[in-house]
Image (cartoon, rainbow, N blue to C red; front, side, top):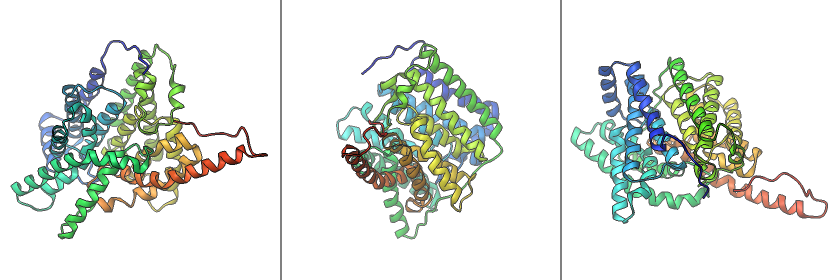
Length: 434
């Protein structure tokens, strides 16, 4: 493993400052009493996909919820003595993003407790599973829906929700290890696929007893200028700090762009923290520009998508393997019945970058095709889990990767065989390896 020198701030302090900036921004935007009222409304909402917390509790309350969950998650990693590597950055920014539209302290803590119990039962140090526990909270809406959305009395609802959360935490990690082989690491949101399977079973059981759970669409608007100003300031500071850590240069960034991104590719370990921060800023800017240029509102869901892309810019995503996915998803959105600038279509594109390793390994054309296919799947599988799984695109991405990768491998073998045959192309382009 290559060691890269760093200066000044520790990684914990640097990430913590980002979460503190969210909390500070919350109090600049909304008065304290309004924030706390809004947070309470967030805590007792059903949170089923898509529930925009900006619309539920206000912009300040949503930012406060996101920053607070981010800080507490960072603290949990610190207590567990987990390293801030690529997967940790991905987990922290993902939980921060989804805390704008689906995750809150109430629906996340039981799942985290279940993961902790799993670690104790299997005699694993919690530090080994601490990062995974962040992703496991994707099923937070199931906890909220059981607690507040099905008309149960208060204590029965709380017991059902918390009990389900602990059970999810107990089973999600061993299942995710098994499902990893289903998509071979070409779906970056592996736990999202696992959560989709669990959510599908849970929703099926509820529907069997005539307890209907359907995806929702609660969205906010009118915050584009404020959120753009805040996000662009954070991106500029991230870029500058990354360049500073990298010796005021872009050295090694081209090396990062040559990585396929297939799980588990840690950009911090491979290229250094400074270069990774540069990539985080670049991917954040690309994602923000897509949302703005397409004419979509910056709301809890789209900002959450941008933050998730930024997180995985430390753990698999970069412009070279993500832009082909965006292109394919854009083409699908352009041709289908959904509004091109609608939030549903836009987040399908942003989160469709879960398939970035396909473009990174098999090339641009494969990436475009995967992005196109992903949109058709992502817009239809939500019914299976009833919006209980916040990582709907990870669920979709698992099926797309499992379907397309064997076909691409077959085509690649055939192409390689033809190029080696007499008269075949000897020096044709080859997809970058892992």
